[in-house]
Length: 335
Image 1: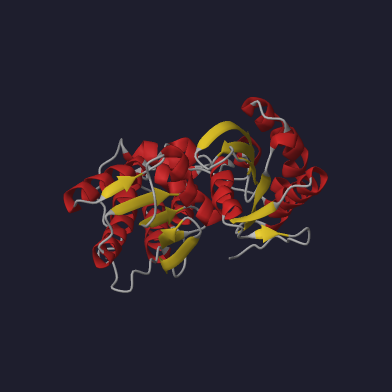
Image 2: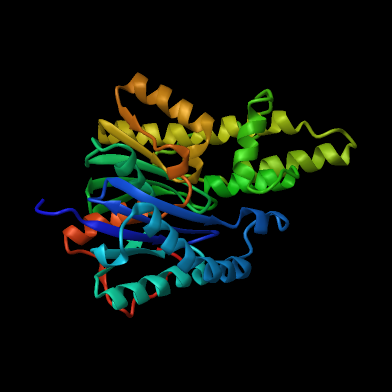
């Protein structure tokens, strides 16, 4: 490479306003995230209209902060990469609009990035030695997908959930238990204090078609809690968290391991917000080691929504002259 390439990434698909500068697709120079967790906690979840309004307030200060932390003038940016989907449409539009304005003002290319592919690309920042091909599991609040990464710009879907995502199940269980938002980290913490001695879905096993389904497990937990309360008994919150986590994580890992065996994949990547779950990280590490598969899992800060992953994914499209968008780029809620 003749010269360093600097990509400004912008992410606003849900409730995090994020911007980051990444050099050559691998080196994170500066990142900024404006979190809305405290704003949405009182509602027990993300309110799209409120999230969109707060993105409007935070987007430009967040971009300026990322550039300042990176020590890179905006004129030095080679391209602007932005999440255009999937996500909450009103939230996505804020990031897309800001990215289009910057790209136009700077005279730089605009690169559109799939949010799910961005999550996978977080591993390129965490692990400089990681190269395709590999098989990736993306586990988040909106997606549970197995994706074959053939090269840096070719992402082939292998399997996905037929109903709820695993992160959505975590959020629903946390809410029925009265745990604070965000529920995933709280369940993770409570699960370590409880006993996994409740079986909610005895027949929950990896399917031959690799398709995930979490609606049954989620509903079983909800019904269990309702029945306990109707009997006037104390809800064993920690034991429910431990038991639910064991089933959800075991099922998620077993299905991914089946996909790895079928494809004889020597490398596996875990990505997405649920990749921060300590039980999932530990179980997959154990199973991959036993199977002789090298597992890559980014640090928790790169599992949740961030713009570094968007900049990294955008870099590889930029140098391949792919996914270059015009100023008519629109946000897409589902991809």
